[in-house]
Amino acid sequence: MKKNKLTDLRSYLDLLRAEHDLLEIHEEVDPYLEIAEIHRRVIQQQGPALLFRNVKGSSFPVVTNLFGTQNRLDLAFGKKPQEFVRDIVHLLETIMPPTPGKLWQNRGLFVDASRIGLKNVKNAPILENALVPPKLSSLPMLTSWHSDGGPFVTLPLVYTEHPVDRTHNLGMYRIQRHSDTQTGIHWQIHKGGGYHYHEAEKRDEALPLTLYIGGPPALMLSAIAPLPEDIPELMLTSLVMGERLPMTKDPRGGHRLVAHSEFAIKGVVPPHIRQPEGPFGDHYGYNSLEHDYPVFEVSHLYHRNDAIYPATVVGRPKQEDYFIGDYLQDLLSPLFPLVMKGVKSLKTFGETGFHCLAAARVTDRYPREAFAAGLRILGEGQLSLTKFLIITDGGVDITDFRALWTHVLERVRWDQDLFVFANVSQDTLDYTGPSVNKGSKAMLMGLGKEPIRVLPHSFSGSLPLSCSNPVAFLPGTLVVEGTGYEESPELPVELAQHSGLKDWQVILLVDDVKEATISMQEFLWTFFTRFEPAADLYGASTSVKRFHVGLEAPIVIDCRMKPWYTEVLEVDEPTRQLVDEKIERIIPKKWL
Image 1: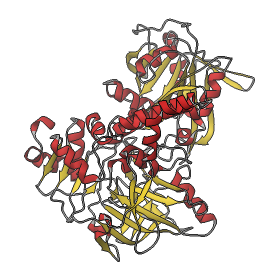
Image 2: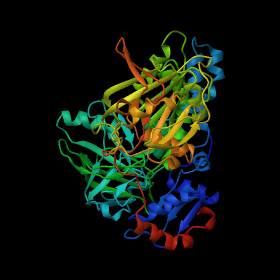
Image 3: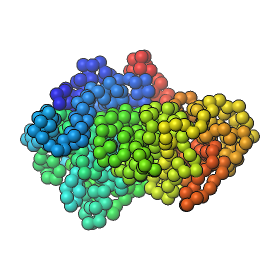
Image 4: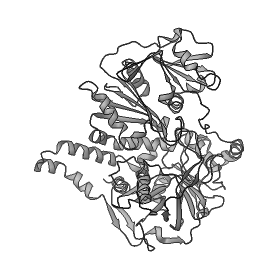
């Protein structure tokens, strides 16, 4: 697994510098709103990583946009980890019965596997400086949006251990600074760290926590990866690095420390204590609201000499997490058929914040086998948060939404191939449901080799008086602008029953057709982040047979903003003007 040895953040920055993919900025910048807006403008143009050397109110430089292009992901992680995962899957599929010849053919794989693990070191850079008591305000935590509830650690690497069996979790759970010694911790029960805290709280115990900021690029990737609960993230870190991960003993006790992290913040999360956390501009592109979450009581803080503070900015896709998510899907996709029988390939769409839309190509050898495969997906780890799942058994490229959607609409039987599961859990950040964490899911299947209908490509019908600006954005799919939800909540029913639309399979009802159809990115974002399946799907008619609800086309999906939805994230005018004034001095014109 030989590649550039990126053992810490600095080695990665050296590589980016050598590749002319790192821009160093020496003019003073503010971690309150300004850095985030500079970052957003640069990442929109696929610009370089940004190293801010002069950060207001802190002695630590800030680096952002570490992974915001495919090229930087290749530099950070390379192709070898993907090859290793594919080889492991191939071995598991072909090794039985084991023979000396098969073992010999795979000897290189066993050598690579022997390099995976942890190793203890004594002279660890992370121990070079200690702050006791800690002073979290010395860290240049970003406030990314004017509506945010305060400064956040936006690349937090949160390490915990199960209070009973000591298995570990490394996850990325947002951290809001409350004071110099306390933060919020945005845990959700369906995430690994949340499980650990739930178990500790049942035992009336505080849960020890180590918050890393910075380290090997592989450590950051592993914290984001949606691994099954029984796969340790630090092993994935070692796999991606291509060598054992150096760890060191904390002289003050507790968890061992990642030796080459930039910052390590240690403390405990006490049981039964909650404080308001948020609001926060999240990766769906909306403002998530203030809610009560556990608190992290910090006891001490370590950092390297000349520590560099890494950060990212989340918001309306595409942001940095989009590129990381796609890389992780490529890395882990060979494992899907092993853990979910019948699933040949799987794609979650970063354009929708990942959880809002997924698609899978599955086997359908007997009646409704595809449905069983869909249930496996909806029951697997973080995939259980999927709101809308598209299933096909065809040879279509499921990463190409235009081709996939057309293929499915040509084959779907609306009376039997659409399943809506109401009154289930929904992603905490998705406010389309009736209340936080509650909502619904849908599974749409388009099966069979041959189409059963021809889809229209242009519109020549009529619309209700309350609708306008029809755009045939995709075959069989019409996007229509209507009056607002509060004025016309029953408009979807009228639209579905309108005689001038009977040739169309799907009609999206939106607030602004021009914005929704300016690109595939905006179409997907508007479509899948602004409706809840159990509340916003309508058919020309509805039938119930054997407890299954069937619909008749056209299917109208109400994607208008509703009164209980949170605001779309927008840059505030003072921040826009502040960055406008200096952006051309600090960023080359080719990145603007």
